[in-house]
Image (cartoon, rainbow, N blue to C red):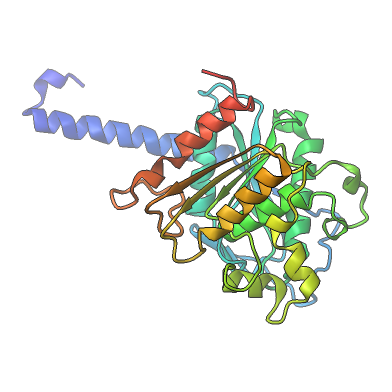
Length: 318
């Protein structure tokens, strides 16, 4: 088309904007076409319920999960592939999973900076502990053992989680060798320790007055045993072999109190493990990848996280 034949600058802008949006949609469709689902337990899901039914999936959410899996989004071909990979744990209070805002959109961002993403669909309240832990550790073992197939490096595999997914990611970072995360399959011999962890408005403590009650009840039941309150309060499980962690929370979060992140930060400091925390004046729970005007400065957390990853060597320095 000869742009000089257009009737007005406004018409020219409309056509250019249409072409840009069409290109963006095509690029998104191409990324979705490249994505593929990977079943976590091809040999049989451990502790599968007798009443298991097909998972309830929609574009925005997944729930009632009986067949854990992960969607593999390889790093974008037009980005510098770094060999880094991240297992993404969407949140949802262990009742459902925010597969769009805290899953697919996160994968798209990671892909854009050369990082391959694996969006995890883990078991929820229908099972409770320790099945979500088993799912995330199996995901880590699959990615590490098949690193060559996925085009990633086995020593650059991190985990990223939001809210209850942040709790699960923190479990992966602290309970990667715990017996509860093993199922006596040969894959248990593969290290499930993440090389780094990113926790966004995470649930951390199961203790009364700090925890998110819905997440605790869905994971541990209405009357959790004292040993489970201790084990799944991941700030109490931090040790010197916990991987480096990046934390983000809003101080006005009314869903998951900011004290969760603060407790984990202090535990990391006490253990002498590298940690970086960003607390924002405003960060309504569930902001995820939102960038609207009402989101505020917290919307800049992905850029801060990328700089942290580059500083620590999981991505090449710029």
